[in-house]
Image: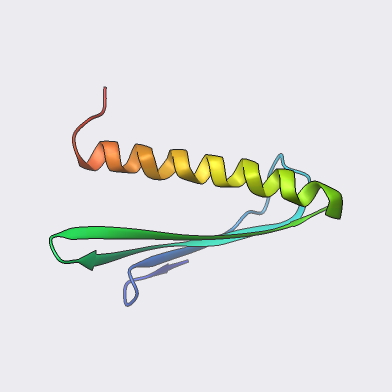
Length: 79
């Protein structure tokens, strides 16, 4: 779901290969001086509670890569 008012996009996965009951989040873009900030919120509920720390670590790594790739594209550092 896109919001032009808040410059944000909220999502909920309807299908994911991860063992989760629910996976959702929000990306928001905001100006900060001469720069832009991208904020990411992600939520997940693991099928098995003991798996949640591993899944969170994996999601953080994936989101970090996503933001690094976005920054590279914006800065013209793509191959």
